[in-house]
Image 1 (cartoon, protein in one colour):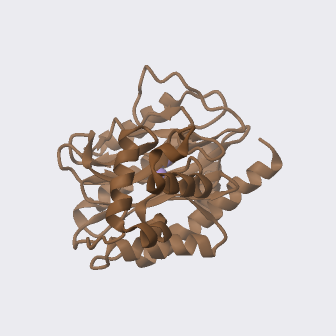
Image 2 (tube, protein in one colour):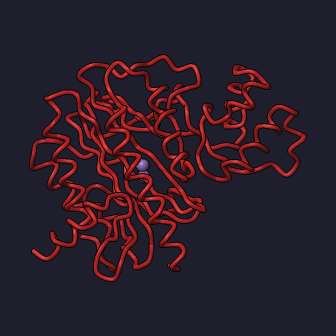
Length: 318
Ligand code: MN
Ligand code: MN
């Protein structure tokens, strides 16, 4: 990895860390998901970062991919558990990080356990170490406390303008996961813990996040409205995920129902990927923590958390 590249990863990570601190102050029961999402995303942009994906604000048994719609009315409930998963990029170099805010005493311990599991997982990281070895300590930590990891959600490697760049880091000992950490490469580790069954399913009727999959050779064949949307998305977000809140100028021009219909059809015809909302199958509450890191010669350089970056160094000495 070049010096500039590392610098961009670190800068994106610093903004993402500050955005998490900001989120701790704004995510409160009673507020709407929409106002919270808009204010955290505004904070990131005002800090000089670009948004790498729509902020995910996933409530209770919703594990991921919940981002507010443009007319979303849902408020953060009392006694809830809110996952805040946010992404910042600088020139396409991404910080992907998440924390969980817990307004329910019953889940404080689960929160602590998942955080501890992430620290233990991160402390395994060195060039040549198997992804699965990090997964093994993550699951062991969560299971020892009486909870489950969500097995079909994983960490991943990152590359320029690509959040999931092809490799998966399991949150358990997976004999089929053959990948190993490589020096100079960027990864995100993200354990999810639950008091449910440890598995999520896609809710296909709830799609709030999209990304460009394949631009048709002849845009005009799509019709003028869809062509306009594809052109806008290509220029603004490239291959990074987006949501309808980010299409406000287009919605103003074309109307919300037209844009929604077009997004649906573009997903069906394979121009867009769509990311259904993911919920825990046992209706268990879900906690997630996530950090991005670059693998250094003797351990992870955590980009999204300077406090943990130092802690891991000390932790590894013991
Ligand atoms: Mn994330
Ligand atoms: Mn991630």
